[in-house]
Length: 140
Image (tube, rainbow, N blue to C red):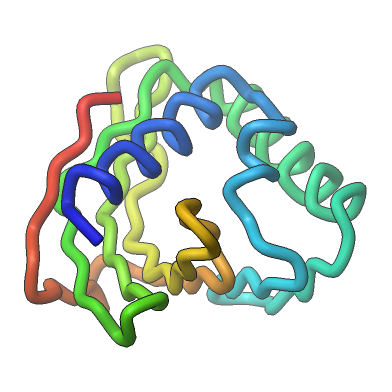
């Protein structure tokens, strides 16, 4: 699996977030999967539930008047031939150009046939960020 393929996947993911596209964001996830934030763990088992959770996230981003989403650092390591670990440091920018949220997310991705899907994501404070074996960049 190449860095180009991983970059393409996350570029699509970021673009879907920037456009508040529930269908595209949901398509990035393999169900069931887990979302871990500092205050809760969510088990997503069906598409409608996934769209509801991300709809809530999108509402928060719209209320914060998000103007941009920036990836500061991105890296990955291969776990098996089908599973990847990805670490991304995110900045969410408001309409005034200020960072209103910054955090790191660690993703487990699985390759099914020729598609990548997220099976787990853990969001945490930047102080817990990790840098994995291979760096990659995003253009979205």
